[in-house]
Amino acid sequence: MQIDLEEKHSQVQCFFEPQGIAVIGASQHSEKIGYQVIKNLQEGGTFPLPHLKGFSGRIFPVNPKADQVLGLRCYSKITEIPERVDLAIICVPARLVTQAIQDCAQKKVKGVSIISAGFGEAGTEGKKLQEGFLEIAKRAGMRIVGPNCLGIIYPPRHLNASFAPFLPLSGKVAFISQSGALLDSVIDWSVKENYGFSAMISYGNKCDLDAPDFIAWAAKDPYTKAIALYIEGLNDGRYFLEIAKKVTPIKPIVALKAGKSAVGRKAVGSHTGSLAGSYQIYKGVFRQSGVIMADTLTEMFDMAKTLAYQPLAKGNRVAIVTNGGGNGVMCADYCEELGIELPNLPPELIEKLDKSGRMHPAWSRGNPLDLVGDAGSERYEIALEAVMSSGVYDGVIVIQTLQTMTKPLRNAGILVEMQKKYKKPVIGAFMGGVITEAGTKYLEKQGIPNYNDLNRAAKAMWALIEYGRYLRRRKV
Image (cartoon, rainbow, N blue to C red):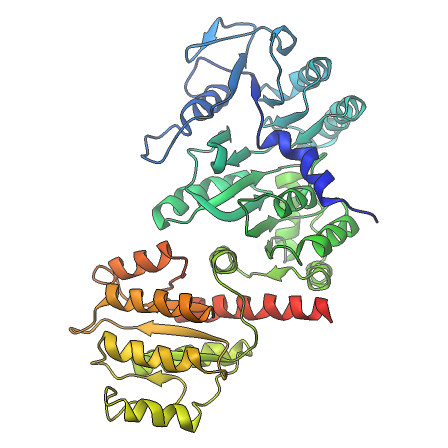
């Protein structure tokens, strides 16, 4: 199968950088989706948040029963709009969608996002409707997202072409989700956690465009460094495999597959009309194509963020530096479960640290490297310099527990300095809350992920090791 990623990217670019957008089903009533979509396009969201900004292109409401919506002139049909329309967002009842698609074809619209539900997920009649308007779109050369989807969100262009509550912060992770409601919740969570996205895509019933099409688009998107994927089922497993094989050498993909159990697979069918398929088959497809599998949402976003911001580990050997012995032990346990090696400190490194005159007499002289609870910033700096300059270690997990003499912000600065100097992956585990917040915020701002849970920290490092290993295998 010959796949041109540049061509795939250009086919769906109209959904991310349109010049003109028509909203078919625009409404004057604030509780209607057609109102919320217009407001989102104008202001970036329906809730007042400081980072929000509206779409800079043209917005054309379409509703034969209204003269204007939110101060914009309203058109009876999309064909009456005198200007170019690249993207149409359809919010009308299911029975009216086919006519709307015919009008879009006449207008020569490039892409259509169908938010309306009541199609493939709703039984035989819905499936017939879906097949009918898809045939119209194919003849016209239009691409469709949905139906039964939330829409497209592209923070780099302040584009909230959805009925999601607001734009997320800009970041480097593209999130592709078959579930729109899940995407809604993630947006709300992400702003609180300061987690940024390059794009958020809800593709619903995938009557036309499916997850692989958006993965191919993300591969060439300059703002995306890693791809997170929530998936229930695929239309064409081989197509996914071929696309993923093309994309994973360029950008990492982390996937969470829903419908593992018999009950879950049944629920998938009624949710988006998908065939969930065997979880073992999906595991095999992901493994063949280099997709990293996550077991939970938290794990998926942790790994995607780490892969987007951190350099890859060149090997499997990690040092743990901590000021709390128990925390180091727990982290070591998690690393061993994941197959991460924790090589002992070389004798020359132990001697170097002993002779520094800065270490506590009771420091561990092992890996985990326990600095002891009264460790100040200088001790962290000496230890990190030693392990990161050593050829024995490919990365480091740095644990900080809060003691009276701990300086979280200064310690965070040391981590950033060492990472810039040695270009090795660093994962922070600054554990605590109020007092450590300044340090953790600084780490995140500088691209070093921090986790208050040692298992999450170990899994994040594992992702850097696993993806690095995959790329090395590809080169052999």
